[in-house]
Length: 158
Ligand code: RP5
Image (cartoon, rainbow, N blue to C red):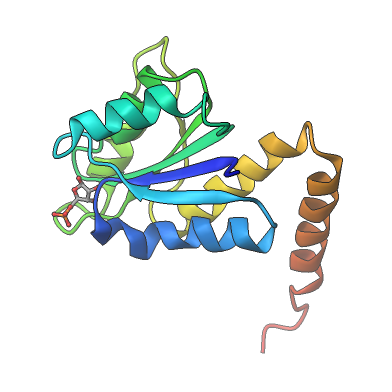
């Protein structure tokens, strides 16, 4: 059963959001990935967000670009934590996506990550941290992942 749901506004977002999926894979976290557009498929969004907790999902990662209302709209329809990834847009390089996602009015939070690949990776790592609070085996895997990253940083630059 998937514990993390990755949703994105368009298939064009997958190039960014696949990094969240790959990071979850590396940590052994069961997840699913779906295209759910707030404005092109509003009924799909409603069904996904309202049904997420009942299907056993624990965290939702939502990526979108431009007028990126997907994470906020998803958060409005579930009590699960929603992590927002601003996808880099062509016109404004993702600044539009970032501001759309991060500036939620008080009352409905979206945990907003960095623009693009870094944000997708960190959304997965943050989801792992959240899940590890009640999963000791995952906590150990996450700590091992972090230690490996530390060990992989060279002292010499060349
Ligand atoms: C948003 O519009 C999507 O999240 C995507 O980042 C952006 C462009 O979508 P496409 O025109 O590539 O489908 O809804």
